[in-house]
Image (cartoon, rainbow, N blue to C red; front, side, top):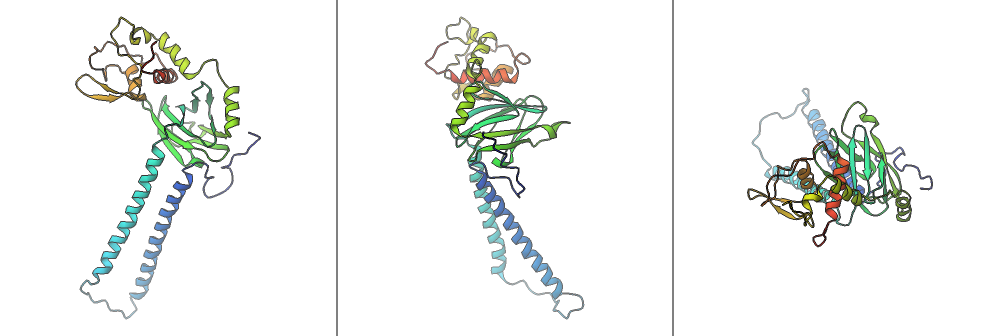
Length: 319
């Protein structure tokens, strides 16, 4: 990256606005800060004014009076209400923008463990405590923890997402500045929590493609998942041509699945993971609960690869 220095190392109030949502997050923050400062100033001025007016040695009217000024009471009730409703609507729209990734985003998988970050790209490229991403393209990071709760935090991107064991979470961003940006764990996760740091390296598209080519492994994430799918014996039951009566997985990802008992479930990453580790929890309608659990036999990286392979299976394909 031509020796680019970290953009968030300069001494400043907030780090560089290096993602597409950073400016929006800062605008909301400064607006709320300004509202709090204005309210504090109004209260300070009123306290100061009344303290001087009703100082014990001053000759001020201290008789009780009937309350008057309905307009004033209405104003100080309605105006703050409208201001805070405005903040709520503003924040809700920004939250939805941050939480809903674009459908064409680059998919990256992240595994957090004490005390490191492990990333894997669709092409099979793996990294530890470093994440290379292209400039100007949305990137979705699917996160899971191998042990305790961690938190994926990139201050320059204004994004933070808890990383939980046994559950997938997701965060997305679009970097708009090239360079290196600090990655922290923002959740206390053990004795070396402070050392659980990394960096996100944002590269121009051409340089990113060159990095992908230079770091390409022998097999992609999908190819590794296919190999594990076969070696774990999954294809022996889930192959449409198999004599064993098991659900066909072609085209299943994203589809609504009918379950025993009348319930339904969307076949997302969490559903596929539970089907491998807790197969009796959600059994497909029309099938007996015969699938064994792979808990303790597959680690999170292997599960991620198998899910990537299942996601690649189109409804018209065959094993």
